[in-house]
Length: 450
Image (cartoon, rainbow, N blue to C red; front, side, top):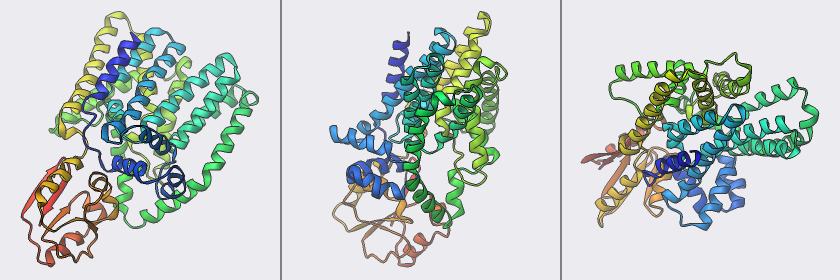
């Protein structure tokens, strides 16, 4: 059964895998194309906001295979399939095989998990490594074998070298280790962990300094990252169920969301006082609560950054379902699977739920340019990564200082409200005498032709 579920998970994650990269994925593609292993650490990472492990692994993968959209997404697919298997093993170890099968089925069909399994970013790897750290931790508690202790520390350290937010799960482990008086047993492994963190600190300090300096340039950019507010908290509850799918009618969407939030989160929190699943409850709730607290000061409260607690969410649901009488078990599990599959297939088959279509925008401009002089104009430098990825030798200019004499100008209106709130780039262009002739929308990538 578990292998059939893994096969189902793989099939779902291969559908529509060749959709266009969005802006951040294009950054990943440009990194592996343009930087050496050493430069990823010493040059690129100092200006990025993530640790370098994912980029280094993606660079290795790209050095073996032809680098294109779907190939660069295969590592994320692999990480997510492995996560499904690890979570199955966790459910099996903590309760029984049926709990393992239930959680594997729910995670395999989860719309949010499918979405980020098709993204050439670090979140799927971080989720795998946190899940592996949890599995290794419970095996270390059971067997007291040092190999599981080292697996635990190395996977936990790997998750933090992949993304910084998983560090929020560390208090869960520290609490349990000291509560159970296991500090002496885990000390050798934690010594490795401390050395690894110390080694990462200089890069982290440089990145934080850079992020704060950029944040001073505009509050809108910081708001985009996710401060603590009711909307961002409620989005965590909803997106864990629906993923990136929504309904056009916001009233119906809100009512359906509220109804399903009660069911899903009610099941996940049903055993909040059950000592047998306290560890799972800590895994789910403590990182979310810590992220909410931190985000009053540093904006990190976005649901996708908390993808590493999604396995705990479904493990708790599986545990609660397994305790239900049979007459309720099958209907309720069926409802959850149908919701998951419906949300997943809506994302996989409907383009407007998918990523920004930068590939389509570039193809349109290439065909439209002909032999004429042209310029691709952006309000800010950080918006150009996708065009650089799909059209490396294109003529790109950014900012309101544009003074080119090109016959055609393609002005990208991508999140200009954040990077150019006064619309200075457009105003300057039109003051130079350029007239807008058409507008084109490539799934949120809006291009105005002058």
